[in-house]
Length: 225
Image: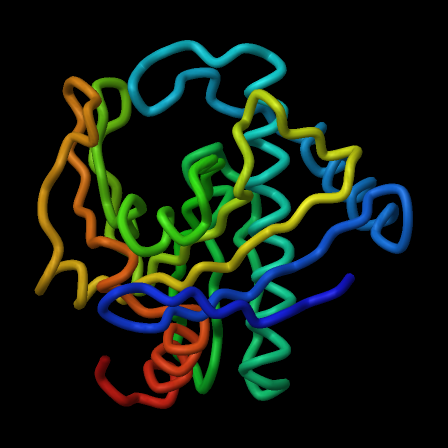
């Protein structure tokens, strides 16, 4: 799997993403097969955050993205943070927890939540203008969730309707934010979904893919971020 650092030139700053190039019929066939096998082990929530019922096709694609993001980021975090820490996923309990990642180091546990999406605007517009890091939230069907230490953002820059995981595709690790930054600078928004309450921070004001790794490393070493 090819992995590249991508720089997006926003008006206020440069923003770095990590791009994972995935070839499901070539070098990454086994990786995709493992994701599909993992997907079969549990059911996903059929409701979108707005309460709309997802189609079977859309549900399959969003579940694929969720498992892909989790698996790639666990491996990436382990590589970046080194062998003195353990990066794992929690045992599956229900859909609301399946994207949780735990980092254990020196008897301390750091919890991370991964948010994923299929934005289909130009990648520069997604990063510089449109997208948010999303912290704890509640919706019309989901009660409020407990805060995690960090919130990470992953995306595939295609419309979900046209996305096909059997063709080559790119997953972007777009950075994120510690909960402390969301608390300090975030705002509440329903993101145009009745009954929803999200804590959000514009992505361009959050930490990019390099900065968030540095922040996680500082956190597990006992440095406040």
